[in-house]
View 1 (cartoon, rainbow, N blue to C red):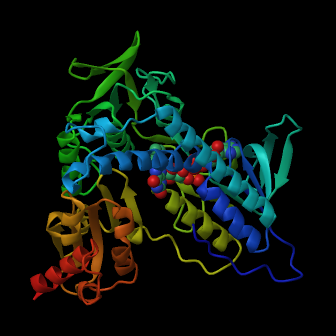
View 2: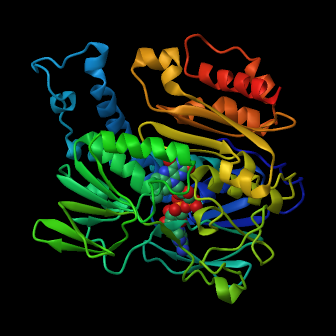
Length: 481
Ligand SMILES: Cc1cc2nc3c(=O)[nH]c(=O)nc-3n(C[C@H](O)[C@H](O)[C@H](O)COP(=O)(O)OP(=O)(O)OC[C@H]3O[C@@H](n4cnc5c(N)ncnc54)[C@H](O)[C@@H]3O)c2cc1C
């Protein structure tokens, strides 16, 4: 992740003492920025550098999904004239077997290596890294209980950054046992592919894992309490994903709230609110996260929490207590690693007196790693409609793109939201394989307030998927004439 470096502390002035609690992207990026800005920095982490992002969430899930992506590509092989040797016809995925123990070993190796890299980098830069649990003892002091059982330490601090993240939400009637009923952090202990995986929750995490396990070869049932999967996302994009899921053989159960999951012999039984029962070999519970804000001494220090238990922050990451900042999932601002890191960097720039640009969620780019992926940037259609903005929404199916045809890609589209009067690009959605990469031209357009005409006038490679972005921009131009 890119870093902003605050202006170093002028010579002669004592280095400010900064203590960071939590070593995920919200914490470690900030620690590096503060150290480079001339502060004396201690970072305390109770589990492993990189946080949940590196050890259990982003890195492991995206590494697993990388394997799933190859299986999805293999599915298209016959259309492109490839037959798996030794296999006459039939389902091409039958020709490839996923060895989940090897996949998961690779996932865990990669995550651990990245965590080690982060520790090395912090230490090389001069950040003091302490393995242990930190909590506030009043606004200007962090108490550290070291993991090695050494004596408790008190660290006085001019600036404290709380970046303690979040953990999976559990349902009392569906408590994970780590074997058959699982939270997403426990999936990497599996040594064999679940025969029939019941995924409870169709938000981003549920949808990503449901899609990945289906591609890896499991039979998947996705239980959604809402009308459709990915209820918070662009409706057209969610519709494409749900349709693709169904076409690939996934059972998607809409308007079906799971109330319990119990282990029955070698399997699980999931009961829905209307009494229906879904059976499977394993159940993944993916029903959101809870912020890690208990036992941090927040109330005693006067740090205000929201009704949902997140730390209340403003756009420069200040909490209600002077000198105490917070970043990342513990703030509930937007649960993305990129946003956590940005909040941490902003906090340090503000605390050390550097120029600060407050957090602007209007330009955030995000990606859902289903197949195809859903990448979004800027304002969503729902936000534009709610704010009364006059906008035009223009989209084009990927199936019309020549490169997509060559690659055998059918599902997906490019959509641009532009201001109806000025033509400024306000937001965009790309549904395509590797949409997370493809969305970048739209990210630039949104960040730099470019007009659709400016996007339309830029060259794109022929043939290319990004050609569809320029083409949609040209249609926006015609629609505004
Ligand atoms: C399955 C999944 C996939 C995801 N994929 C993506 C993705 O592709 N892209 C993306 O941008 N985001 C993704 N996210 C979101 C992303 O993981 C989070 O937004 C990100 O981890 C937040 O970073 P953080 O620093 O706030 O918290 P974390 O990464 O959770 O780190 C917090 C750290 O604080 C430590 N800690 C807590 N309390 C204490 C204490 N008292 N003392 C010491 N240490 C403490 C914890 O041990 C932890 O290591 C995903 C989330 C999930 C669940």
